[in-house]
Image 1: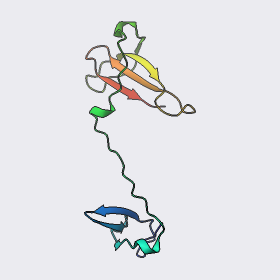
Image 2: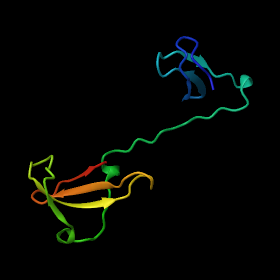
Image 3: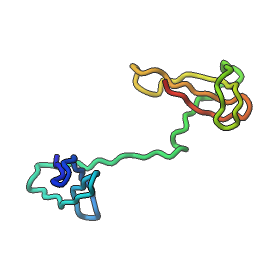
Image 4: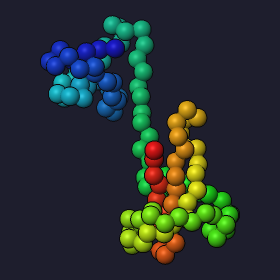
Amino acid sequence: MRFCPSCGTLMTLRREGERVVWVCPSCGHREEHNPSNLQFAVLKHSIRHTEKERIVVVGEQKIETLPKMKGAVCPRCGHDEAYYWLMQTRRADEPPTRFFRCARCGHVWREYD
């Protein structure tokens, strides 16, 4: 763990070709990583998903078997009637996510509580 000498923010390690450098995410201060000062260092990589990768497949259930409700306004066409279903997409101690499918255009969107 290393803190930026300029602003005090926790710095992160980044690989730049063959070199590893400490970089401050706030002010951009950079320092060469000196492995003799530390026993080990961890490089962390975040995975960014595209919208296509975030699609949730519900299954082969027929849409007509899902319950329908009024008052769920489609963000695409403005129709106020949609089919809906619940799915636990987060931890068990958090509420389930509501998915909606527009009864007119078929657009699917989700709503978190």
